[in-house]
Length: 264
Ligand SMILES: NC(=O)c1ccc[n+]([C@@H]2O[C@H](COP(=O)([O-])OP(=O)(O)OC[C@H]3O[C@@H](n4cnc5c(N)ncnc54)[C@H](OP(=O)(O)O)[C@@H]3O)[C@@H](O)[C@H]2O)c1
Image 1: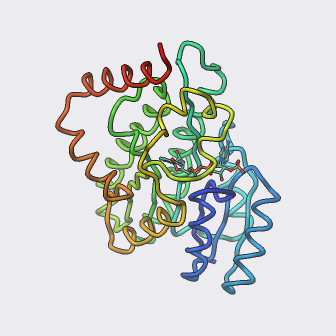
Image 2: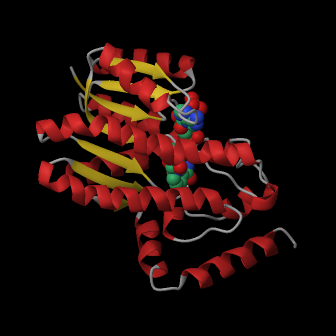
């Protein structure tokens, strides 16, 4: 059976996407750590939309988790025609004080597993000359972000990797899209690594979308066969304007603004 595999489906943007893809009759494989949330979501979307939904519980911050997801989907005879690498976490704070293992786990999730999943599922798409990959980046991928340094760098990696992969896949008729959300009301800022006073300096008065708005934009961009989309008009404009300013200036301005908000 041909399926769409969606990571980070248990909450936020991924959960909203699962609902909307199911309404469009995609058969789904949902991946995350929270088994209860995945099970409940599968039951809901199956009953509502008459599709097939499977789930695979995996911690993608662990080495070999991507391979586990690949092997499990093969065991279930599921052929992934669309891969959506959405799972990701952030971290806020002074890098020098951040927990090293948390930073490394974030890179494993945001980068290593994303690359591994692309490499594992792509050969079948290339062989069939069909299918596609959506990698979820971030507004933060377009500039250095002091006090969110490793997260922004991890998303810059996603951006560069995905933009290159888009071109490599064109001769095989495999569509690849970089989708970059800005601030979105989800659990993203409530995780232990993000829920602190440095994190709050970033979100105060920020332009924000809902997970549902972001999921709709992603599907519309995909259906228009876009290879690049920044979610939200204000975010898209920000990216255009910011590309005119040197990175060092942006980093200095961000750092000064955040330190001021922290009364430092
Ligand atoms: N919200 C924003 O403001 C914002 C802005 C720009 C980009 N983004 C990006 O959007 C994507 C989705 O985030 P969100 O905003 O929807 O946040 P969210 O509500 O926290 O959702 C994150 C998803 O990733 C999963 N996940 C986290 N750690 C995981 C792990 N180790 N292994 C497997 N799955 C894991 C979570 O499920 P479990 O906890 O069940 O594992 C959850 O389903 C991320 O890539 C994020 O970087 C978000």
